[in-house]
Image (cartoon, rainbow, N blue to C red; front, side, top):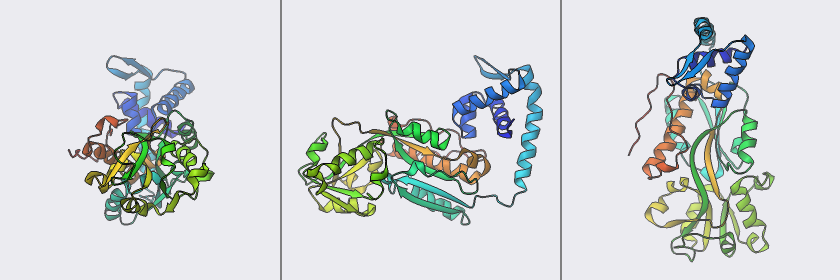
Length: 340
């Protein structure tokens, strides 16, 4: 029996539901259920039963609990002997569409609070595939998946756990308010072919299977003969600045995250949804659950990203897009209040 399973057992015994225990442990509920079922099968006895009040220990579970607590406590004491109270580094990979979204401000706070922690921030079209199984150097990935295609299932298999769902959104395009595309309620890919696509970081696009909504959209825009000559490749930070000057250009973007751009609030830029295209996507945070349990600073980082995502929705009036509540903060750290 793995010590991790005993930890699951103890936390569930102290929780009102499996869902609450899963949130406290930073694991997916199915993974927690499977581990505990395996423990019951190995011991040959039921440890929990359900009633209207939630879950409760059986007589066998009550007998095992004090001993399980002691074993988990011993292991925690052994870990405390380590000189490594922090990981060597934490690598954060962010989908290119989310450049400048949520993470930079969080990193500034963490670098000030934890000057000895090495935090690396990388933008990529394949954020969810940068997995680290090294507990000394865990990775987190903020990325976009479509539940209707195969990408989410593939990424969950790669990471060997479910991600944290943050919010729902969709792909569309940003346009200049003075251009001919402005003022539309929606637009098709065919109508975009005559205009300039400002495309950031196309280097690894063609290596990605056509399973992700954004890649599928960009393939259709780039590969058509009429569209290839209208692609302007630029740096991520320059795409929005160029759009302010180029009236007949557009940028493919993800909403509501695109509301971070000042041009949308001022009206200089407009967001137009794509018409007749499967452009819906959900924002997920992939993370290392083992690192969250081992390092309080990683736990705090994960919780901060969850809180900031919900806070962003609240500030822009998009609370209905949230996929899950922010959940409990790690032990010893109260959840920050939402700013209305």
